[in-house]
Length: 335
Image (cartoon, rainbow, N blue to C red; front, side):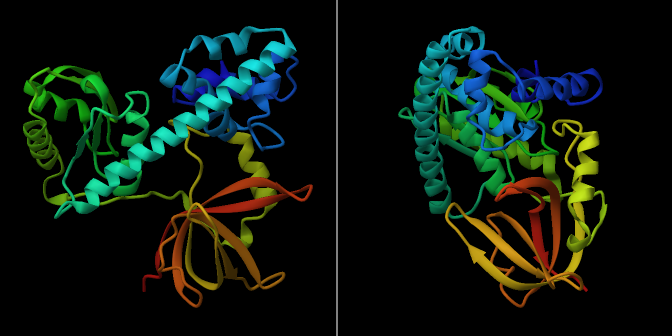
């Protein structure tokens, strides 16, 4: 129940939150053969909702996307340790293929986007060589990167669409339905199939017009809300542990977001996969605290003063629990 609820992005409120919380407790001590080996997919010493969403669920979903969902089902119900390991190894191979296929698709779509004279209101990309099992994941990555709707269509005209908050995908697809054999979904995510004689250029034009009608003069402005202000040197392990009392976080129960203003960056360390760690000047303890995140812009150079939105997590490093401050948005400090 816990894995399925998080994997299907069901709201984590009310009874759902209670079941996921209880399910996580059981997963951390389960003796079921398949779940025990699946649990090893996470590097976290204790499984959390993030472990389910980013480590376990993608492996289970990969089977249905690129191979046979029965592999994942069988792993969940087997009581044979040897069979569970064999099935898990298959899922690992399939998931690696999924990541490679997804990366190639995203890279190609982004190359096409960068080649365009201007960024459209709705990104529409079509290629009969793209696997339909990863087009939804690719569309989601495009939304994250460009903060505007994305439609990615692959083999046999099968595609997926994703959209950021504030845009109704189903309404936009309805306005472009002359080119579609079928479509369905909800405001933020949808699936679609092209008609055999569909004109993708016309679909692109209709979708861009529909999205422009929805956003009006506001444009594609990304807005990130925060809960309260908290200096990073005050965001210590005790607070992170107290926050876990209202976990698990997810749909309809988001991770709290904190604002810190006018932070001085003492040092910046860049790593592979666009990961960056920032040393922030602090008036207490050792004189600095660390924050980290992905795709942190060059505004956060050594010596800069920045405003930061961040989340507070619990991490384990060299056998010790510690607070991790994860940057989700950053800008030069505002006067």
